[in-house]
Image (cartoon, rainbow, N blue to C red; front, side, top):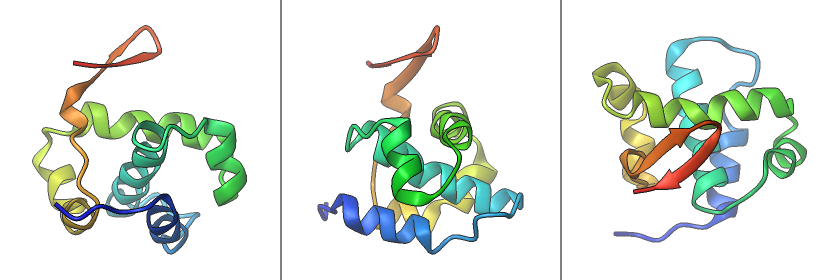
Length: 102
Protein backbone atom coordinates (compact mmCIF):
# COMPACT_ATOMS: atom_id res chain seq x y z
CA UNK A 1 0.00 0.00 0.00
CA UNK A 2 1.40 3.37 -1.03
CA UNK A 3 1.76 5.88 1.75
CA UNK A 4 0.52 9.40 1.10
CA UNK A 5 0.98 12.78 2.72
CA UNK A 6 -1.36 15.36 4.14
CA UNK A 7 -0.25 17.78 1.40
CA UNK A 8 -1.27 15.33 -1.36
CA UNK A 9 -4.72 14.86 0.16
CA UNK A 10 -5.13 18.60 0.67
CA UNK A 11 -4.15 19.34 -2.94
CA UNK A 12 -6.69 16.81 -4.23
CA UNK A 13 -9.35 18.39 -2.03
CA UNK A 14 -8.57 21.86 -3.32
CA UNK A 15 -8.94 20.61 -6.91
CA UNK A 16 -12.59 19.66 -6.30
CA UNK A 17 -15.18 22.34 -7.11
CA UNK A 18 -16.27 24.03 -3.88
CA UNK A 19 -19.80 25.21 -4.58
CA UNK A 20 -21.33 22.10 -6.11
CA UNK A 21 -23.90 19.82 -4.48
CA UNK A 22 -23.56 17.09 -7.07
CA UNK A 23 -23.45 13.75 -5.29
CA UNK A 24 -20.18 12.62 -6.85
CA UNK A 25 -18.39 15.82 -5.80
CA UNK A 26 -19.89 15.79 -2.29
CA UNK A 27 -18.80 12.17 -1.85
CA UNK A 28 -15.26 12.86 -3.05
CA UNK A 29 -14.96 16.00 -0.94
CA UNK A 30 -16.24 14.21 2.17
CA UNK A 31 -13.85 11.29 1.64
CA UNK A 32 -10.83 13.61 1.56
CA UNK A 33 -12.04 15.73 4.48
CA UNK A 34 -12.51 12.63 6.61
CA UNK A 35 -8.95 11.49 5.84
CA UNK A 36 -7.61 14.86 6.96
CA UNK A 37 -9.70 14.63 10.13
CA UNK A 38 -9.19 11.00 11.10
CA UNK A 39 -5.87 9.91 9.62
CA UNK A 40 -3.96 13.17 10.01
CA UNK A 41 -5.86 14.27 13.15
CA UNK A 42 -6.57 17.80 11.95
CA UNK A 43 -9.31 19.71 13.72
CA UNK A 44 -12.32 21.08 11.88
CA UNK A 45 -10.90 24.59 12.31
CA UNK A 46 -7.53 23.60 10.85
CA UNK A 47 -9.16 21.96 7.84
CA UNK A 48 -11.40 25.01 7.34
CA UNK A 49 -8.39 27.34 7.45
CA UNK A 50 -6.42 25.22 4.97
CA UNK A 51 -9.27 24.77 2.49
CA UNK A 52 -11.42 27.88 2.78
CA UNK A 53 -14.51 25.77 3.53
CA UNK A 54 -16.85 26.76 6.33
CA UNK A 55 -16.25 24.81 9.57
CA UNK A 56 -19.87 23.60 9.53
CA UNK A 57 -19.26 22.13 6.07
CA UNK A 58 -16.22 20.31 7.43
CA UNK A 59 -18.22 19.00 10.41
CA UNK A 60 -20.95 17.60 8.15
CA UNK A 61 -18.62 16.17 5.51
CA UNK A 62 -16.23 14.37 7.83
CA UNK A 63 -19.08 12.14 9.07
CA UNK A 64 -20.46 11.12 5.66
CA UNK A 65 -17.89 8.44 4.80
CA UNK A 66 -18.52 6.67 8.11
CA UNK A 67 -22.25 6.41 7.45
CA UNK A 68 -21.95 5.76 3.69
CA UNK A 69 -18.92 3.44 3.58
CA UNK A 70 -21.11 0.46 2.59
CA UNK A 71 -23.27 2.35 0.07
CA UNK A 72 -22.59 1.11 -3.50
CA UNK A 73 -23.11 4.55 -5.09
CA UNK A 74 -20.73 6.16 -2.60
CA UNK A 75 -18.07 3.47 -3.17
CA UNK A 76 -18.34 4.02 -6.92
CA UNK A 77 -18.03 7.80 -6.53
CA UNK A 78 -14.88 7.62 -4.41
CA UNK A 79 -13.26 4.61 -6.10
CA UNK A 80 -10.40 6.51 -7.77
CA UNK A 81 -9.68 8.44 -4.56
CA UNK A 82 -9.81 5.28 -2.44
CA UNK A 83 -7.20 3.72 -4.72
CA UNK A 84 -4.92 6.75 -4.39
CA UNK A 85 -5.62 7.39 -0.69
CA UNK A 86 -6.72 4.17 1.00
CA UNK A 87 -8.41 4.56 4.38
CA UNK A 88 -10.84 2.18 6.07
CA UNK A 89 -13.81 4.17 7.33
CA UNK A 90 -15.66 1.05 8.42
CA UNK A 91 -13.36 0.88 11.48
CA UNK A 92 -14.84 4.12 12.78
CA UNK A 93 -18.15 4.39 14.60
CA UNK A 94 -20.07 7.46 15.73
CA UNK A 95 -21.17 7.62 19.36
CA UNK A 96 -22.76 10.84 20.60
CA UNK A 97 -20.57 13.06 18.38
CA UNK A 98 -17.41 11.17 19.34
CA UNK A 99 -15.51 8.93 16.97
CA UNK A 100 -13.99 5.66 18.10
CA UNK A 101 -11.83 3.22 16.25
CA UNK A 102 -13.06 -0.36 16.62
